[in-house]
Image (cartoon, rainbow, N blue to C red; front, side, top):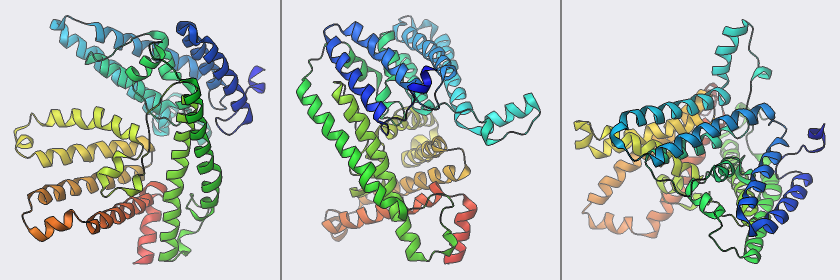
Length: 421
């Protein structure tokens, strides 16, 4: 019955903000005893998550079990001093990493549930049968980070309460940013002085910025974008298609950065700093810089836990060792294909990831020859404002047209191309 009274969407509902204010006040009052404060934060986060329409007790129990398993694994690996058992340590860490990935795949991609459902019940699997746990992607990435850093013995301030708060911290539960355990735990350890007035001012300003983006600018842009089958794309001419893509690109950026602003601002009011997620990505002069400033926490995570491990493994192969650019490009393409798969279970997301991976690989080759250039005219051009302006325009349009793969199924894209050309 209680769920009927405490049930709301984050950031949209007045109930959320009333509960948020109450939590902030009590959290600040309890700051004198950081242990009690952190227990209060953990309980508050869990109750707030249970208020989400698509988050129930079953989801919570499963995630708590997985949290306990990953915490024990990371804690054990981080404290393991006898590296004579390195083989066993690798088996343990690899097994838990695979477990987390399998759970992510099961609850994020309907195809895996469909296979199991049909085999078990011998019935047709429909959309209503799909079981989805909200926040599973971000939670899984945090858990994988903890286990991997434990394997590297790079964890500090290890505490089960801190880890629970790290996993379930409600301001960043739905839309990130994907923060790192050490930085988050240090802020909960009670060792940092907190300037309440500055936190309140900065956090409130950030929330207002997010509200303005989300509820003013995005509302104005939304009617001009492409959302599923709401518009007959085949009836549009080239100019209308391009303008629609521009609107969609700015909507995606403003909508997502608005959520990040609200999450970062809400956390800051509580005295906790979350990492930045966006830094004017559309003003960057090449694709690498754009991705370094778009969904920064995800890009950083993919770089640390996908790109570099693949690169280090492939470096042991003699051919790749002699061809570092090729090695880097293969690693980039694999990383972005995985990035595409993370965004959705349709094949068009794989193509979208491949599109950006290949784009970055071409940029990598271009940068190599750019560094080697001895032509004075070209060297002056590379350092000029013209080069920077052309780079910004070209990068932005590469990203914009890639949204076709992100927003639409491949057969629709083929029909559009055939119609226009």
